[in-house]
Structures are given as structure tokens and as C-alpha cells.
Image (cartoon, rainbow, N blue to C red; front, side, top):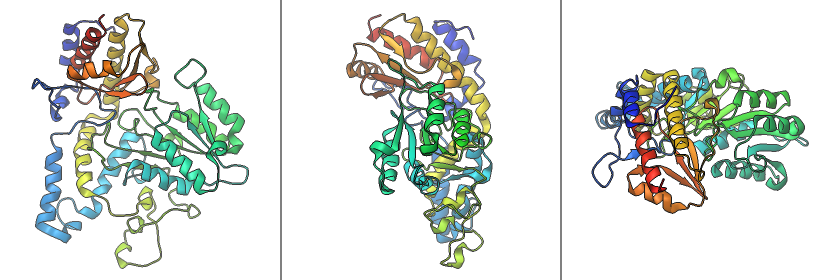
Length: 422
């Protein structure tokens, strides 16, 4: 694509955008002047689908009209509400329907997965993670190490970029796995790093880890609904993700979990069990012997929050219409246009720390502005931009392809240009 740095070009791209109608399916926050804000923060919280209210009210109506009978009656019984969500998310992450379940929150799911898949042995007990992983992942893996009696100072291996660089090189990741793999029980990496926006080569990492006998899992909080994923074909052991970012399920929305089919019937894997993971045919016989569902659903513990699932269902119906191929196609054009416009500013103060290669990123650019501080972020916020600041010096901009336009991107860069005095 040959981009042009003009408003006319941005409008032309919007007019020819095959996904343009979906912008009207979402509510945009308003700026203080009453106009729509420039919302470029879908990597933190996706916008509310206009249909979410109807889906939630449908559950409320069933609860009101059916009471407890709503678990088994009505158009969408409460006991099976999650099933269609798992099937729809499976298509988003490249999995079989029995490998995916909607349940809990991301970090809860991560802990449940580590109960099953972090199996330390005498000489193989370490966990590999990226050093600048999202803090919750660091807390989770460190607490698991401590729970098993290990000191994170010696049992946690952290991937760091080379001196003077911001992103991790795949060859360095693979080299570390090759050299330390016999000590590593679990590789647990964010599929897309929240800070830099780097998308890791998950297939290569999985293959390298398995070659060395390691279990491999990914936190896809910033990858699910954003990247083309093929979790089943890549052979990933497990993955977890939230749905309130690119999948627009609302604050604290229900999370997702993937368990590869080679594990879903295993009897040797320990798990923290609960009755919602019990065989559906005998669940309500109230037997005290746990018989897990043969699928990712077997890791469920409690019946889930159907009201939260309703909001996710509203968004997933849109994903079903659009499809990940079309979504990622627009995402690459839109993010590429943002990159082109920022580079067109010609300022040595601006550095994009997100990889340049489209395959190595999603709908996010992390922008570092030298000799700046949070006052710049406050200034663009006062101009109606809703983005994200990360200490010490990075502004994360995420043009979500479902609802952001090329004009949004163009207007943002004009605001940035003015506030930088360029």
C-alpha cells in the first residue's frame, strides 16, 4: 500500500473500507466538546457494542420470567450459555471447539493451567518468561514457583532484549531454549507483549520448547482477537486470554482458555476441580467422585456469570460476521498507515519501539518521545485522544480495526504534531 499524508487520502480509505459499517456498531465516548473522542485504546478496553444491552437484557428477562427454570429453558439456557462462546472463540484463536472454554478471569485461568501443566522435577523446574511481561503474569509464575518451594531468583528465567534494543530477537529466544531447555519445565510467554507491541513467533517457540521437553503456554491477552492464531496446529499446550480488550466484552469480562486436544483426555494431569467441570450427563446426580468433561470445559470450576457472557456474546457475533482474515487485513493497513504518518513527522524525538514487520505486531504501536514526560500524554488527552501511557516514556496507540477509521489515525497524528511543535 502506498500511503499519502493527507486528510483526503484517509477519507478515501474509509470510504472504500469493507468493514466501515461496523464502526456504527459501537458506542464512542464523548470529548468535553460533545464530539466523539479519538478512541485508540482498544488494547486496554474495547468499546461497547451497541447490541450488548440487548443480549444482557435477554438474560435479565429470562431470569425475571423463568427464575431457576432459566437454567434449562428459554432460548439460551444458563447452563449451556458458555458453549457457543467457546466455539466462537475457538475460531478466533485457531482451535477446535472442544479445546476452548469461556471461564473465570485471565490470571485465575493461568493459575489453573499451571496447576496442571507446571510439573517441576528435580532437574527440570524452571519457568521461562519475558522480563517485561505484564506484571500479573510475573506475579502468577513467581507465586507458583514459591508454592512448589522454589526461589524465583534462581528458578525464573527471564528473556531480555539485547543491550540498546527494545524487542526480543527470535533467534535469542530459541538459543536460550536450546541451551537451558533441559532445566525448563514451563515456557510461559505473552504472545504479544503489552508494552512493546511485539508479537512473538509462537509456532517456532512451541516447536523449540517441545524439542527440549518443555511444556509451552501463552498469555494471549493482547493477541486474541488481534492476531491470526493457529493454537491447535502450532501444538501449543495451553493458552489463556481476557476478552475485554480486542474482543470488547466489557470491564472485567469473562476470559478464555485453550487446552490442546492431546491433553483433554489425560487422567494423569492434576487439576483443581469444581462441579461445573464434571461430566454433564451426571453433574446433577451430585456424586462426590469427580469425572471431568473431556475437553477444555473439564477445567471449569463454578457455573459462570451469564450476564458477563452476554456482553461477550454480543461482540463475538460481530466477529463471526467479519472473520479474523478480514479483521487482520484491515488491521495491517490501519497500523501501517499510523506508522507511515508518524514517520512522516520527521522528528528525531519520536521512536516507534514496536517491530516494523507486520507479522511481528498487531493493532498497536508503542511510541517513545524523547525528552518528554506524562505532560505530553495529558496534552493529547485534553485534545480528545483516549490512548494509554506506560511508564516511563511510552504512549501506546491501538487502532482497533473493528471500529477505528483511517481518519481517526490521521487526526491523532495531527494532534501529536501540534503538541510537539512540529
